Structures are given as structure tokens and as C-alpha cells.
Image (cartoon, rainbow, N blue to C red):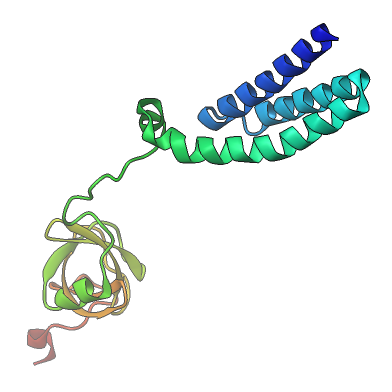
Length: 176
């Protein structure tokens, strides 16, 4: 009987160790299934000892496993090992974060250059920032100097500074 209780205790501790290993590794649930198997076999062995022992083990696991998991999830990120496993708050350098609507509205009149071709949408560089842009009309090739004429949410609408051929607005000198 003492040997059975020792086996039950080892199975339960092994299940808890497998849950811990699942939380710190990426086995996608495999270790959790192994832990569940340990717990089920521990309950089976406990009922072999006696019905009271089996019920006691079931109740202990129904209370103990959720408490253990909650404690691990709350405690682990605060340990040295947990800090190495989780992502911290990394400050974003100015100009690299996503623009806000107010940021794009302030860019009206600014000049930049296309990083990708605008067909009609693409990417432009205005100062240190890369932004999603849409051509006012037509196609604007890569490397073309552009001017922001308006903004719409997180998107800037641009016009080429120099005529690029098809789709470019006519120059005032060409109209005369």
C-alpha cells in the first residue's frame, strides 16, 4: 500500500512537472497531454488502493491543478528565467511606430520620395518615416519625389513633384 501511495505521489508530481515544462517550452500541448495521462493513471492507482483514496486524489487534482497553473502563470514572468522567456516592453524609436491620424494630418505639404511604386497605393519616405500612401491619380514609379496633398486616416495622398508621364497632373507651364 505504501508503494502504491508513493507511485501515486510520483505520478502527480510528474504531472505538475510536465505542466511546468509545457509553460516554458513550445511543445504545443504534448506535455499537457502527458500530464493529463499521469493524473488519470494516478487516479486509477488511487482507486486501486481504495475508493476513499481515489475520491481524495480526484478532489485534490480538481483543486490543485488550476491553482498550480494560475500561480505559475502569475509567478513565472517575475522570475529571472521567466523574464528571459517573455517579451518585455521595448521602446519604439521615434519615427518607427505606426502613424496616428493627427500625425498624417500634420504631414500635408511635406515632401518625400516613393519607396515603392504607387499603383495607386504603396510606400513613401517622408523624412525618417516610411508611410503607406496613395497616388492622387494614376501610377507613380519608385524613386519619384512627391508632395503630400492630403491625408485620410492613416494614409497620405501624394502627388508627384515632377511629371512622370502617364497619370501625372499636367504642369502649369505645359498648360499655357
